[in-house]
Image: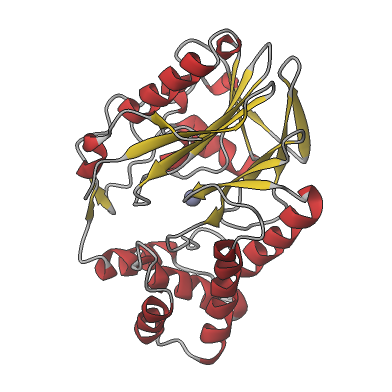
Length: 316
Ligand SMILES: [Zn+2]
């Protein structure tokens, strides 16, 4: 496993400064962040899974936005650990956290390290945020950052999870999608809804008409990118495949052959179980689906590659 690298991708140099913080390789617990910088504040979109990675992220925010970084608002796109574990770390000097209503309690409770799924010795010290600092966003909220704004918008319904948010910067047309978009790796749908996710992709396009997408996982792209279309085709395929069969192992093998370049193919089986439950009116046993993913991965997944992080580098 190569070392984890953070690429700082400036999407707009003038204020509002808009930066995508793109992590690679696209592996378990490696996810993107980003920030929008105004004259009086910074909206940081998502933290990292470990203390060290979050400290490096915050250091880079302060380096690129030295004055405005004093007023930090962390927007948690959803309550998966690689996105929110570092919230308490990022807010050691104060600030607020915004999350969708269904994610607020999980964010307040602090880091999720999923001991049944992963082995890892690199979490560091991950404290929960101050409960009073965590605020729900219902509908649409505009954050005034001085001469810039960040629109934080709750995704209607259940999509990737039951509590997803996106962040839009209107001047550059940049949409931070959280995990509504995966580019180059197998999406993870166990905690969401496949029909809801498809609806959310339509909603995202119709509502924002974004020019640039910063996905939760994978490189920056425009909405017309083949990979975005491919993800939609995959979600539709999950529904089609499980309408006629519940042989999840066989279907997962078919998926691996059809999308051979995607990392983390062990997620297919969990996604198929989710799709089957969604369209047959069943309640998914999420623990069972996660067990199937772990079995497909050959056992608990070792995250100690997170230790080998390299310093961030800027690419234009
Ligand atoms: Zn996620």
